[in-house]
Image (cartoon, rainbow, N blue to C red; front, side, top):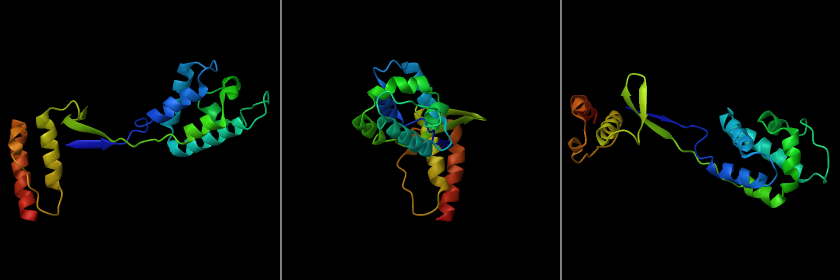
Length: 177
């Protein structure tokens, strides 16, 4: 059996690298930026939070040099861990081009597939054996209704302990079609 989840932190690499490039050379620690990005990825609606963050960064790019910054102007940046002092450090490095580059960074949805090894224990599908992967895929495919399914020699990869349940599912699938 497979379990598929869509973790929010996967596919976030472009945003991370562009954020770091935007703040580079501002004397804001990399660990601080990493922590900020981790908090952003944990948000329940990270897309909306990202939009708000981009709006706040845009407003910072439009500030006059040496303008005051308050946490009321940048509530998302502040809540996610970038203090006003940090913001004052990176404001001189903010450019409209850098902001635009960050705003165009793509966030990809990468599902995480895990194989059910035993009760309450899942392992990454990359770590599962060929037999575990074939058994899980075949079980999933046979559970689906619809058009005929052609399978060429699945027994080459099946785990011996899953052959009987697969044969049973093939019989059920055959009767439904």
